[in-house]
Image 1 (tube, rainbow, N blue to C red):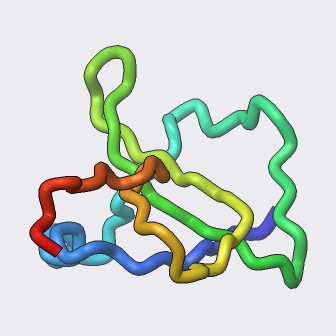
Image 2: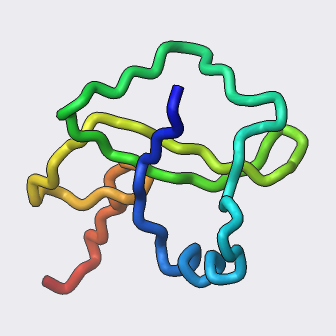
Length: 95
């Protein structure tokens, strides 16, 4: 398999940190490689949403996860936070 790239746009904090990396990768798979637990199929011509998350392993080591979902266009409805839960309402708003 040839190397494939999934391009993403970093947030401001990551952009600032990236300047110290030079040409080094920001993250790599485990030294034993990556073995999917299920098939991962990305179909040509289909639009996806890619989200990069930071986290920690069970041993407390930093990790990065790439979430791949079907693209859902913005419809202008209710606003959601980054994890998809509805934002809390503010019933005390003066308007």
